[in-house]
Image (tube, rainbow, N blue to C red; front, side, top):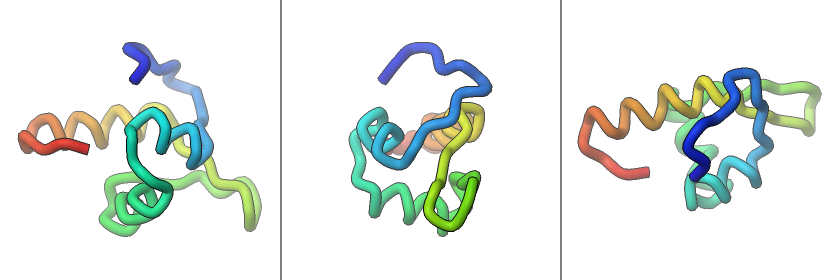
Length: 67
């Protein structure tokens, strides 16, 4: 994972999955669990804000979990 994400950066599901080392299905599970808030640009285009990803990773780290 990159050390510093740009706060305004938007990632698509594939980029996010590659960065976290998880599948798109896992990303969807994180959405349903309320850990990620997708930004829907239209019906087919979804992006994720880098700030939301940082928050999710902080929650995992505090809980002692892994992504």
